[in-house]
Image 1 (tube, helix red, strand yellow):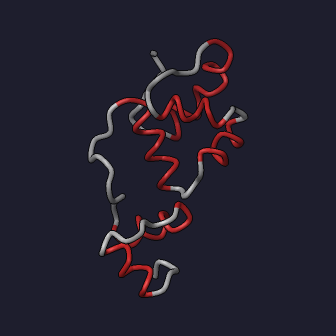
Image 2 (spheres, one colour; image 1 turned 135 degrees about the vertical axis):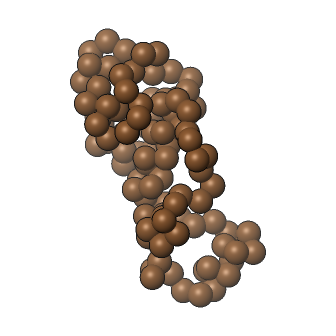
Length: 107
């Protein structure tokens, strides 16, 4: 159901390894929740990280789709910085429509 063999799942259960980003969408679908995430993520960073992981995207892939640097995305996920100016205006639809509950970027 998740697309991996039984040995891989056993390693996950015994904390010998962790699921890859590629496996996360199927795991979330199977469990009907995202393991290891906060029930009510606070801030743009936590919600952005949850969005990315739920879709099995690396920072590099999501950053590329947003036409930003992966380091910039990492800082946003850690709540170290936020988009401003023209970038904020350009990405506003992404944050308001894709990340439910975030609302407008106010940082």
